[in-house]
Amino acid sequence: MKDKLRKFRAVRIKEGKRQDIEEKVVREAVLRIFLNEKEIVALSCTPCDLTYLAAGFLLSEGFLGDVTEIEKVDSSEAKVVVHTREPRKVGEESRLKGVLTSGCGRGKTFASWEDIDPLEDTLIDLDLSFSSDEIHKIMSQFQQRSRLFMETAGVHGAALATGDGILLFNEDIGRHNAVDKVLGESFLKGIDLKDKFLVISGRVSSDIVSKLWNSGLSLVVSRTAPTSLAVEMAQRLGITVVGFVRGGRMNIYSYPVRIA
Amino acid sequence: MKDKLRKFRAVRIKEGKRQDIEEKVVREAVLRIFLNEKEIVALSCTPCDLTYLAAGFLLSEGFLGDVTEIEKVDSSEAKVVVHTREPRKVGEESRLKGVLTSGCGRGKTFASWEDIDPLEDTLIDLDLSFSSDEIHKIMSQFQQRSRLFMETAGVHGAALATGDGILLFNEDIGRHNAVDKVLGESFLKGIDLKDKFLVISGRVSSDIVSKLWNSGLSLVVSRTAPTSLAVEMAQRLGITVVGFVRGGRMNIYSYPVRIA
Image (tube, one colour):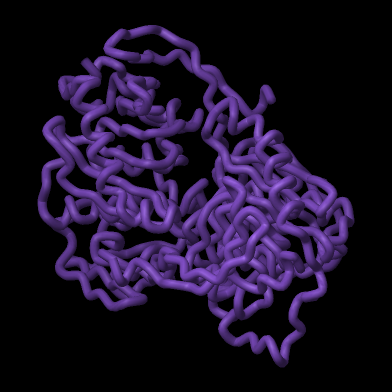
C-alpha cells in the first residue's frame, strides 16, 4: 500500500473547530508508455502495476492486436516500454484521431463501431450466463477488496470475475487505468477472458465498452450508471451492460439473456 | 434536460423478480474542438453548452492565453471551431506532449509546474478568504443544483461561486468537461475569477489544479478526495485545496489561511 499513498498534513474544520491532522492521499504520478521507440501516451495514474497498465492500455486501445506480439516489457517508475517481436509501425494518424474520452482512455473504436453489422460480423458468445445472485455476490466481494478506496476515497476499482469469485482486482485514480491494469494482467498471464466478466466501480462509458470489445469480454457490471453511447455501442456489439448493482437490484441495458 | 438524456428500455431485476422498465441515461457524444483550422482534441461529453466547453478547454489547457484572442466561435452538434483574431500556430509538439490525465483533461502544465518558484513568481492573491460556513452553504446549494446527476447518477458537476452563492453551474459525463463548461462560460461572459472559487463533485487531481492555475482561480472545493500530485502542485502554486466537504467537516490540504 505504501507506493499508493502519501501522507499530508492538513487542517480539518469540524463543527467550527480547527484541528491539525495527517491525512492519507492517493498517489498520482505520470507514466509514459512507449511502443518500441515510439511514445504512445502519458497517463496520470496510481504508480503500481505499471507493466499491467501499459500492456492493458496498448491491447485494450487497439495499439496491439494480441499479447503474443509482445516480446518484453521494460518498466521503471515513470516509463514503460513495450517491445514487440516484429517491428510495428504506429502512424501519427492513430494518435491524432484518438478521442479524448470522458475518462483517460483513447476510444480507438469510436469511429468504426457503427460500421459493425452484428448479423454479418461475429458476435461475442451469447451462451455465457450468470445468475443475478452471482452478480450480487461478486459485487459484495468487490467492495470488500476496495481497500485503497476505503483508505483514500480517491480511486476507482476494476475486477475480472467468474460466477465463483474475483480472479484479478486493481485500483487506480483513473477509472480506465484500473480496467487496463486488470486487462493487462490477464493478457500477460494468458487468462482466457471469454467466460469471465468485468466489474467496475465507476460509470460505463463508451470507452469502457470499447475496451471490452477489444479484449473479447462480453459482460460488464457496475455499481453505477452507463452513458447513452455505451448502451448504443453495447447493443450493436453484443455486449451486456449491467448497471446500478446495489441494494438488491440491478438494471440490464443490453442482452439481458446473459443474466439468468 | 432533453438534449442531456436518452430513455432506454432495460430489464430490472429486483429481489429476484424481472421487470421491463424505461430508464433515463445521460447522453454521451463526441465533440471535436478546432482552433482555427486545426483539430485540437475530440472529447467524449454530454452534448450541451459546447461553446463554453470548447472555450473553457482551450483556455484552461493553455492553448489560448486569454479570451480576448477569440474572434468568434462556430458551434454545431459534433464540432466547435474557435477562431482567433490573429493567426495562431499550434505546433504538433503541444499535442504530442500532452498528458492523458486521470480524467479527460490535457495537463499542459505538468512538465512545467515544478519550475515555478513561489517566491520569485507571482503567487495568486492570499487575501481572498471564505468562512467554513460559507463553504458548507455553497456545497449544499451545489447538490440541489445537480439535477442531471439526480436523474442519471452518471455525471459530474462544477460551479463557480462566491461566499454569497453559486454564479455558474454545469454538469457533464466528464469531470473535466464540467469544469471547462463553467470556466468557458465565465471567460466568454467576462466574469472576473479572482474573487471566486470552484466547486466540483469529483476528485481534485493534478489536471484540475492545472486548470485553476491557468484560469487565475486560487481555491477549489470538493465533496471528495484530492490526489498527491494535486496537493503538491497546489502547495507550490499557491492554490487552496479543500476536500471532503460533507457531514459538517472539511479538510484543507494547502493554504488554509484562505478558510476563516
